[in-house]
Length: 108
Ligand SMILES: [Zn+2]
Ligand SMILES: [Zn+2]
Image 1 (tube, rainbow, N blue to C red):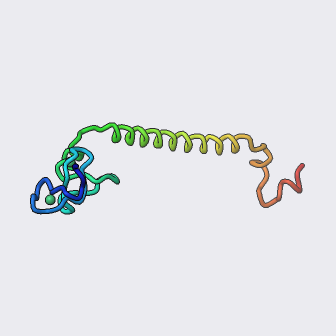
Image 2: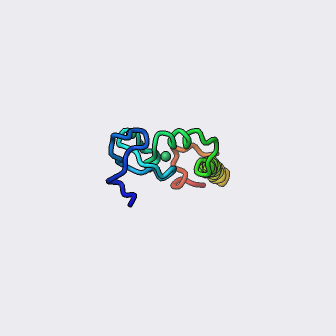
Image 3: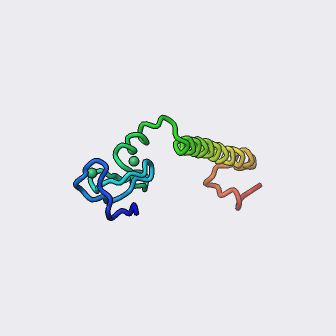
């Protein structure tokens, strides 16, 4: 049976295996295995993963960033649009009277 307990490290034949790499399904010792994006992979697979030019995960992350940017710009635009709209809708007396006269009390 190929259990973790009686397996040896792929790189170090003398050492007991500590974990199994899910990418290449080889056994490795504590020193040869590393954590990468919440997964435990061997150094060789980590290098392979890091060199992958454009994984689907990165594509999704890029798309999410693009959507967030667009949404932020739209939100800012909408916010300023609302400010402009409310300023344009201010009644004329607001511009003609001085503010210190309390226009809502001494209105003509
Ligand atoms: Zn591996
Ligand atoms: Zn090792």
